[in-house]
Amino acid sequence: MCCHVRSASASRRRPQIRPSATSLVAALDLSKPGERQAHDFLCRATRKRDGMWTLSALRRHGDVLLCVVRWAHPSSPANPFSLAEVSLTEIAVCWRDYPSVEAVLDEMERRCAVPTMCEDAA
Image (cartoon, rainbow, N blue to C red; front, top):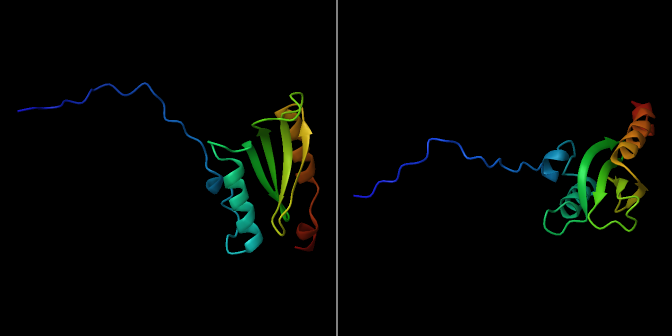
């Protein structure tokens, strides 16, 4: 009779926990076409295998998602980070490059400190 006894010690390998784009954009209403397109784009852009970005932070600001990203293959090694704006109402993405993640986070905080037109109407 063959018996397999499991080791009593826990594995030393830590599981790689990578937040999926789905959990990061949980505040989106995926029944709206623009928000669904933004979600799908972020899933493609941040894929582990062939994605173009690594997503560091994400915040909704009115009708855009502000994304702090690091380019997988930056066009300028001096500015590998960007603040990308992904539209929730149309198919549009724009970004500005920054030299450090701190600079991008500061810009995100600055933009989010200014209320959007949607927030003014509420």
